[in-house]
Length: 444
Ligand code: SF4
Ligand code: SF4
Image 1 (cartoon, rainbow, N blue to C red):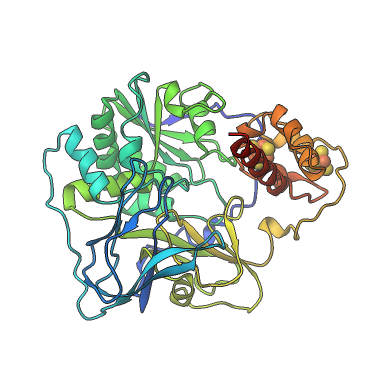
Image 2 (cartoon, rainbow, N blue to C red):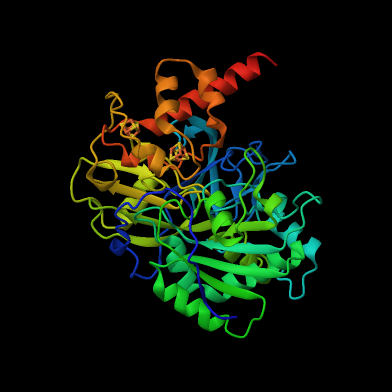
């Protein structure tokens, strides 16, 4: 189907300097195997997986080492062959210590144990394969994909959207995968459409990825129910609520699910993994990670085994140009600042950045007073009043923040980005949300 250009967009948002040129034109490189991998048992939304191996066990890459024992959870498969050297708490990207399985890598013998390929899969076989391969959403939320592929029956899915927006600055892993694995992406999209019995597929890509738009438009030229939609480049275009609004033209209800609109969104990398799991029997033991930032010597995308320490990835990218800088796992708008290089790559890690300071040269934020300029209100894509939310959080009147629809905040950081007073608005909003949840728990 022909390429479509979207004139529609959402209200608000921001235009950060994207800096994608640092890594966008270089092919994905395969990262060497690290000496050890650290497989966190909680690297998805839902209950942590439960370890089924112990110290001293020999494992092969692709073997299950932690099983999903709750409905919303995802199993973990060994990403390398070797010996389990510990089952203990290790540092996670969130800065907390979490239970993990540590495997000392056998660098001589590292063949991957795969599942049997399925040529003509039935919908339930696709869901089962996605579950047994341990696939979760790669767009950031890491929701178990087999659960997502079974939405409530009350919502008929009309359109499956392959999310190729990748609107965070610096990150280019989705872009490179669209260029290098376009056939697997299209196959994964068709498999998702089959499971959901959806009539239409849309590959949504921001206009700043013209080569990916052109390639996918060519490959889809003869498909009459799948199109490529080029969207305006604006942050946070890739957020679920924004993309639904732009592609489907409907609002996701506050506190509701995007499937209520008839749309189903899946990140392009996740769709590629679905195709590989079904067609090639590939377990989810690796992902593509952008290693970038002004302080990285040779920014590039790497295909990395899950659990690889970020220190190993940085070395693979040529090391650092300077010893001071800001280390972020994820993108600069929504990622997690790091105090060391010890955390491992988890299934949701799209990027490892080492940058000079906060995004676009903005210096560290502090609690300067609000000057009531209303720029954050104009930038908020959810139509909230971030200045009020941050002030209520700052003075500890959390219930008032609740009255101002704090739950609708998607934590995109557009407000913090545009604030001339450099207030840490999104951090204050997250703090208030946590306080509200804590008090709801205490009150039963
Ligand atoms: S209030 Fe929330 S949704 Fe609105 S701009 Fe700030 S972080 Fe984004
Ligand atoms: S952008 Fe910053 S200074 Fe302006 S109203 Fe919002 S919080 Fe206040």
